[in-house]
Structure formats: structure tokens, C-alpha cells
Figure 1 (tube, rainbow, N blue to C red):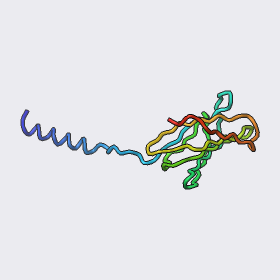
Figure 2 (cartoon, one colour):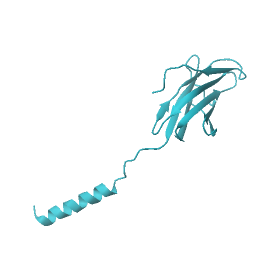
Figure 3 (tube, helix red, strand yellow):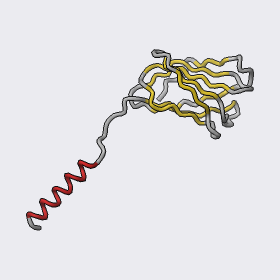
Figure 4 (cartoon, rainbow, N blue to C red):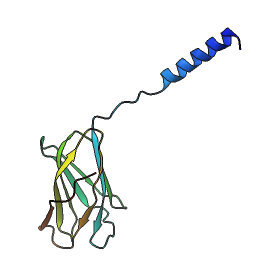
Length: 128
């Protein structure tokens, strides 16, 4: 192999490496999950509200037809989540710690009842 070929290959390698996106750590977290009823059936169109307890900023959404919800780009902090749908008791979960680059899966189960009743979940095992 000639020295010119070696130089061309070296330049191509440098260009290839330089054109790749840099790897950096995400500074925010995500909470995803599924809302089901006590039998395990998914609950579509349930209202889901997520509040950062430090800033009091609240995000609202709803579950899709598969019962899934998604809250991306969360700043690190402590959160509270509330899910509700007509015909079910509201469920609230406090003390959800979101750290840098977290992707927390938090599934919620609604019980039959009136929306004026709230089930508050405490003392569960820590999130992974």
C-alpha cells in the first residue's frame, strides 16, 4: 500500500469519526407507564397528571388506546402522579424521584368507585 493510500484512508477515517453525533448524557428524565383496572385490563383515555413538587409545574395527558402514558423531558426532582377516569377511584402516588437520565416505568391500577375517592399509594418498593 502506498503512502498516498494510507493518507487517504486516514483522512476518510477522521471525517467518518468527526461526522458521528457526540455521545452526551441527557440532563432530564422520563416517566412512562400503563393504567389498568383491578382485573388487569387497560384503561384508555384516563387522565394522568404529573406535578413536580419542587416547582409546582404540572403536566397533563391521557392514556392512549393501549392504556399507556408518557411524560418526557422532566427536570430532576420529586414528582406526584394522579390518574383518574369516570367510574374509577382516583389514584395518587407521591415521592417519585426523577434523576438525570432516568427512564422510570410506573404502572398504575385504578379501582372501581367514585372519582371523589382517592387511593394514595405510599410505602411501595423503590422505583428501579
